Image 1 (cartoon, one colour):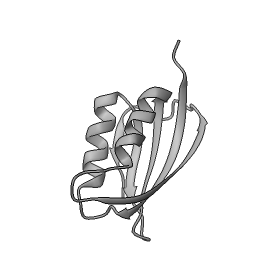
Image 2 (spheres, rainbow, N blue to C red; image 1 turned 30 degrees about the horizontal axis):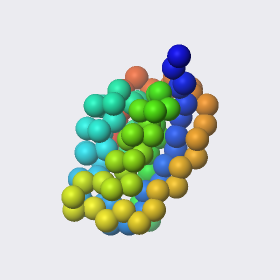
Image 3 (cartoon, rainbow, N blue to C red; image 1 turned 45 degrees about the vertical axis):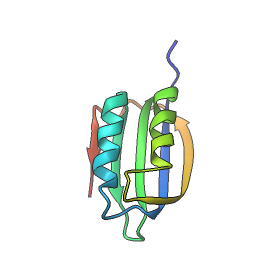
Length: 93
């Protein structure tokens, strides 16, 4: 049985200007996870993921490393209920 949830993540470190958003979208799409990712003015990256908990966990594991130029220092995750609000995964601004 599916265990659908949502996760809100703040990723800290050298995560802007290193294709983090584009690669996060690619990974989320590959796992069938919906939501969005964006750069924040404080230099962090923020993302919301929705879907099966195991798939989100795999995307979050990737976020802890990021693409090769990134240097991820921390990923804060807040889990929540599934909302079915998203129909795909977007890069937002």
